[in-house]
Length: 253
Image 1 (tube, rainbow, N blue to C red):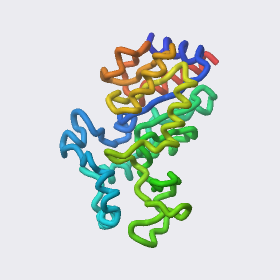
Image 2 (cartoon, rainbow, N blue to C red):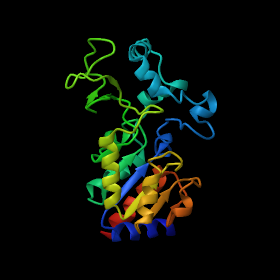
Image 3 (cartoon, rainbow, N blue to C red):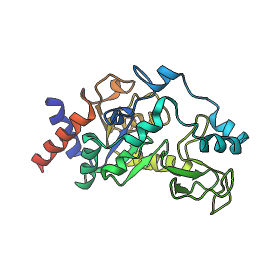
């Protein structure tokens, strides 16, 4: 495939390669997307757009509902529990081990990049398996965190604890956003994989790379909002395209 070879050339020329991944990467692991055909919001309606505001107004009630098992819509919680990394996740982890991929920014909350072996992962929308203090932004493993009061409080600063996943109306945690911007500022080649390009601030990151003269490589079976900006377009699922990309790079090294 010519597009794969063009992507290999661009990646090997680059000084600092970063990936941005979206829901399309996890669809291949059985996790439904939110938007589009078969999406959770398409089937069940959009979630509460004032989620974070309501959490702050009644954190005790939010936690009581959570502990009663009132969870994510349409079986998302079960899909997250069942999901395993797919070849696209493993290919990105391999690129990192090869010293080519310097950072991976993901919009996904499923922890699959970590499970596949990636290490420098920045989870812009949080992680479903972690809790976070909304005051000091410390994070804790969800399963091992001891809940001794409702709502739970941060053992480090006393702030309110919530899920690490970013709610509607909630700002992206500043430590995460800072890392995203720092990695993007260094990036001269970004892999834009499985993202629709409509959710900000994540969608602004490829735009910033393009504006600074960097190369954008899109891996997506569908056209997206970012397609017109991309220099190289691979019209295939990430689980198919990324392993081929890795093998092509290995042949060149």
